[in-house]
Image (cartoon, rainbow, N blue to C red):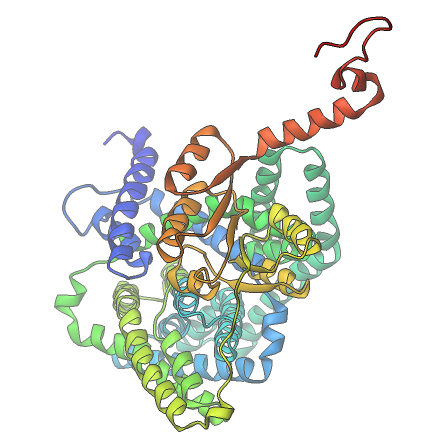
Length: 569
């Protein structure tokens, strides 16, 4: 293949394979990450057929790491962590320690160095954010007490891994130096120097970045150019990451995380997250594909015992540690089992740590292959673990309901004669206020956590989740509703949900929002009673304002009949 099209080839084949296999995984009720990793295995050098450029793949993966960490910072919620800090902070630290020790023990058994064991253990200790949140959202657990503990636990894990990415290079050097007989003074100096650089970077970001970044965003937002705003967000993410590496010697990951965290604090944080999401998702997919390209599938055949041992540490050892920690804090068994099932997998941070270990030349190739094999197997098995947990929970709930006195059972939520409003963004929030002023009872469906909190603070009954999900839609009670209004700008998603609404309640009146004549036709074909074309309604409103002004008011009203002239009958 000519070298000048290798980048085009890896992008084209990466996206095509990831789409086909990601969709296949979704149909099989698995995480799409499984499909993305398998796409990378197919495009890698260990399988026949197309082989992507092995020099470009790591650079694309590095861009994916920057944008992934930027996304982690954008969604970092100190409020969520503080609400469950009493259990999530010590629990996550203890679980990470136990899992790291188990991974280190296996590494030492295999004859690896202490530094390799540290990297390997840390990689097995952290769960995938994507997989965990998806499992909780599918079961409507995010807003429950156990769901909040799981999310807080995940935040602590993410913060610990950010710290690990910073300290791992000097720690690995220290461990290798200790093995080579170097003195402790040099080790201490290296660690202090690294912490000093990190401290200087953090100080600059908090003192300067906290003021400069929101100021730049507000100026760019004032231009009214959406593409310039999106470009500004990405430039800040990539620029801060690159500057952190070049000026302070810290990792791209830490720089991107802080850029996202500071953006999250600004008034434009939500818009920045939404506008950068498509590109972040695209490069996240390429990151997983690039990781899959590094995996040699023959390890499953050549080293099955090591693969099984790695899998058991992730699914059994780490989960058992989490279960014991949660129970030690006096939480019920259902909470402990939910946390255990949520953490019984590894994902993106594990791959980042493995890549760092390889670049530092402390983790052997076999270690990276074992981490990737453990990730694939644990992500595949995670839905099955949750299915077993769901059946157990259903039996426990039925037993508790049978034993509870009738007067102690909570009354069912009764909502009827209401309107379902899908979306609480700029349009949805204003529409909700107008309808409330007119006495219309509302149930709002919104998937963004910040907007859900905003809606609930405003006093609206709110369901968190995607309206296209069956359980989310059922919670909004369309069977007793009078109307559904789609304020979201995604006509295809709205159309699929409309079809399901019609099956549940054929008498429901449904209104939707569209941005083109084609979207209007699509929505009407799906069963919407009326679709509002935003631009057309805006033009109509402006024309009414024009005709109401004195210079043009005469054109709006018919002229009075002339004196002495008969008015036509």
